[in-house]
Length: 124
Image 1 (cartoon, rainbow, N blue to C red):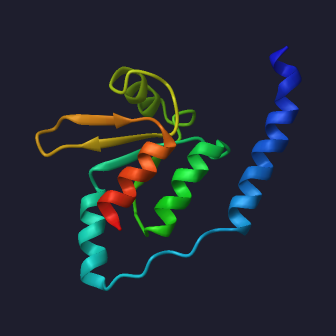
Image 2: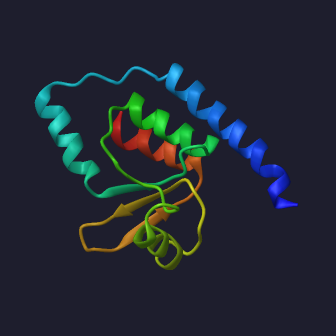
């Protein structure tokens, strides 16, 4: 039964990626010092995502709008990423934003709306 949906998944996923590419938002402009400060703060963030997931695309578009250079991991292609997401985050669900604190602890944020709200609050 799951193989019946594979062609649909491939077509819809491909369509999502094409539309995202064709409608890429414009990035926020900052002066060099301000962008450098933002880039430093983004070093504590990692987005776990699937390229064809519409909720992941939603988060990636917000990152583009805010001109955020956040590390991205596709856990299906990164065994260590999948292990981190499952063992440290608690579940294999994307999008997931890992927010590392100065003390080494991590917060794992799973909902695209929550992630986007966080990014807007912290970086706009």
